[in-house]
Length: 377
Image (tube, rainbow, N blue to C red; front, side):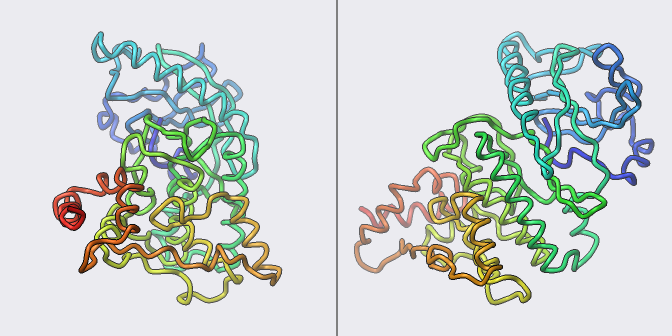
């Protein structure tokens, strides 16, 4: 499974021939056939910690994208086959492949106009593959890098509504994407956004009490702080943070401050370095910017909890209705550097979020946590 875009534009397709064939020692080379010749690899697209992505042709000469299960920490390529790096990794590799197949079958159920389609899941070369849609377009990251004003407010609203519909759909079937970012939203030739790259996705009953300990993808500016701590609780609000951060970038030209830095500042009693969208940009329906600001609050409990609620609030604003109080209320203030002995709210903050605090980075652990501990003793 991969990090980064899983689809390519016509321009990138033409550039495949310029890729250094020796740059990626573990990739399948052009001309390699899979599933008894049903798919033929055209070229390498991308790689990450969990796998490799290729452009390919199927037996009917249609362009597709192939994702290969290749957790490089556990495996290596040997004469085309994927082998465990050592005997002790054999069981883990097999479990990973089985998980890939199961999750790919789950993703194949996601039939939605704004979600990339999975056509087939199969095993070959002692690993697993999925064949997914090839979509001719550019990802948001590429678009935002190429212009200062990529979209009008009307286009931003329309795109976010479609993405929220897609995210609501995957959450309703029990899947968290866990890697929403500008490079994983493709905009096709008609301006339609498509959510791609479910490489870090996990099928589960999406409850706040569910703890994920598996694959993690961290992208600075887009990942909520709970993604940084292995085993931390993740929920639909985690995906919504990433979606909000992505559209913050669309509107402002830059992603919000990295979430671990924000957490450390808040936990030390300093102001959150995040700059709200509200009051800085014109042309958006009432409540639209407020909803994005709420989606990217530091603490999961303070965020929007469901894509459906977010969609409802956008529609209320467009229709001129009264916005819910939950949308405009300020997040609770947390003071962890009082002059006198800290109030219960400070201790409660540490008790409720100690896991997140510990994961907030070396700087905070060394400086901030020591200061807070001294106040509590």
